[in-house]
Amino acid sequence: MSLLKSIVDSYMHKVSGLKEHRERCLRTERWGGSVVLMVVDATFTSIGLNYFTAVVPKVEEFNRDFVETGKIRNLKELTKVDINNLREVWRNRRSWIIAKDISSYLSTISEDDRSALRTWARNTKLENWGEDPIGGIK
Image (cartoon, rainbow, N blue to C red; front, side):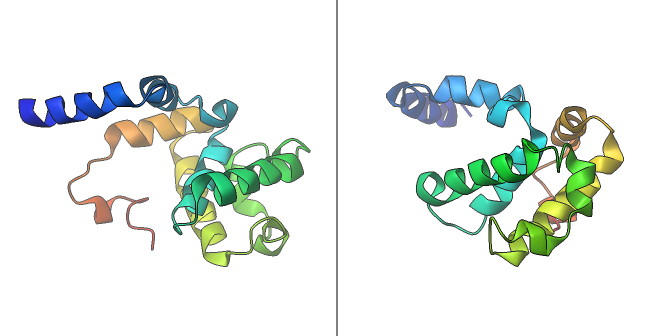
């Protein structure tokens, strides 16, 4: 394990700001603490497009059109929005199905989105990832 740690540490020292970014993620502070935006970010990222030129601008557009306007205030509300309305921002239907499935599951854990995400993350295991309710989403 110490060899792996030394390799990771050597890379961590080369990338300024990475540790701070990691810590913000662990405190659920990405996207201003909006779990809705974190889920949307993850689902957009999952199809392999460039993060900074494709994903970030579209998450920002989604934020402007749906979150800042109050149309979607939490994960439970994301599960109820018609996919065709969401596709005005991001055309990929599969991404929205995944976002809605993740939101639906996390909404069963807690009414508070951040608590739900943190509880799921704390309890999920890398082993048997496909059996995890989120890991098993196609």
